[in-house]
Length: 198
Image 1: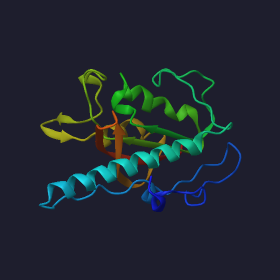
Image 2: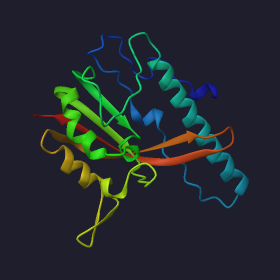
Image 3: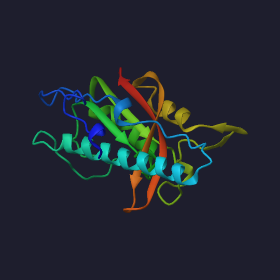
């Protein structure tokens, strides 16, 4: 990471507090917009794209290092069949998850049981539905219904509307997955936040 791109704890506005408090990170400095490559100079275009991918990856590394504290615990489990101990949360982040679940509707219809009243669920997904992860009949969107395109967001709303209200409008957030030292996957997630009201 170049010197001018380094972030301090103050830059990220990380609050030192109890488990009940949220870690606040501004999205804009951490997730820069995708560079527009309209240049005729192929070498310059490649350099811009490389710099974007490297800086985005470095920012994710920084974000994860901020979460590496004794107050954060990581568990592995089935998101469609969570154990009862995982409840009473103020905030749940499901990033790049719903389009990789075998039954995303089950996850969404029961996630309110894990949140306190007034708690927030944040979903982030590029909605890249693949039959190898989710059977087609379980997709929340990305297909035609009654001859019209049925977007995933409409499927999410149908699953969450009985317990949640959406906060604000969906936001697009680009992200990069570094597959190898020289290969990156670039996608754009739609990010929505939902407050539990029932």
